Amino acid sequence: MLRRLLQMLHLPFQIHNPKGVIGINKRNIELIYIHNQRENYHLADDKAKSKEILHREGIACAETYAVIKDMRDVKKGWCTSKVHESMAIKPANGFGGEGIMIIRKNEPGQWVNRGKIISEDQILRHITSILSGLYSMNSSDSCLIEECIVPHPFFAEIYDDGVPDFRIITIKNKPVMAMLRMPTSKSKGKANLHQKGIGIGVDMKKGTLTQVYDGKRYSHHHPDSPGIVFGKAIPFWPEIMDLAVTASKAFPLDFLGIDIVIDKNKGPQIMEVNVRSGLGIQLVNQCGLEKAIQDNL
Image 1 (cartoon, rainbow, N blue to C red):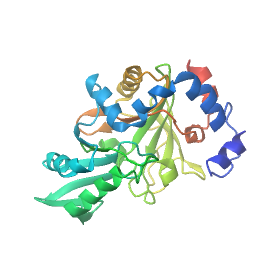
Image 2: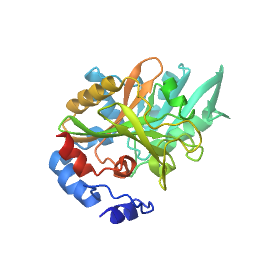
Image 3: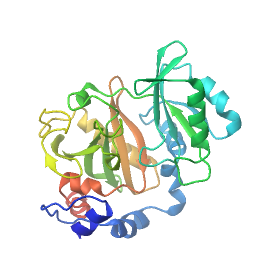
Image 4: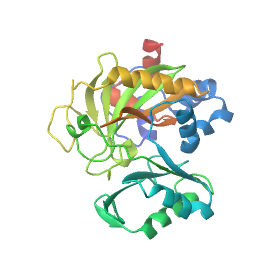
């Protein structure tokens, strides 16, 4: 079972064989299809709709500056947003971190993306590309422009680039497994595992980090930093767990992957929710999802 899972995830086989590992088919049939009604998928798949729910319920998340749904509204949405010093521009129905652009003002009228100056025309073209569905599986999409999260110093102690987040799996409003996803020098600021980011296991009972998994091997430190990660206490861990539960209750979906980041000033914030949570979290934690569910429910 594990070898088949690793082949599907394009990851090399490991000697360690976690118990209760599940594959894509079992996840779909026994977790997604049973616990989530298809007509409600869009509430998580569409980031703009998810943000509406989070804002309505008063759940901590980044402020929404604009939601652009039509080409005719691109300039208006941009003009509304550019008064802010920084922002994240995202496809509402994107996946895997594709199409996300983080920009900050370098000086009045000048924007920077990952250390490089970017013109307003380039930004508008990117928004247009999002609307055309370039970063989603649809022929069209919406563009979400929101507050830019400032990562808590805790993350910089491990690796100072990009925006890391905690992925927490919930079933019937109960957290059952978690990991910290972090960017690397190869991931261009993205924390997604398949974008060459890394996963760090989480001991949910202790609120501490465990082993680091880079897709090939396990270690006790980030691949770009020598500092030991194993056993490192996670700040705001009780609040993070409570936030995951609160967010899960706001959606009519009983199986979710909830992404949470710790903002430097605002503390834990929901980044997004996911219906089809990836299975790499099992390898990161060296524990099968089936076993984690049995242990925590």
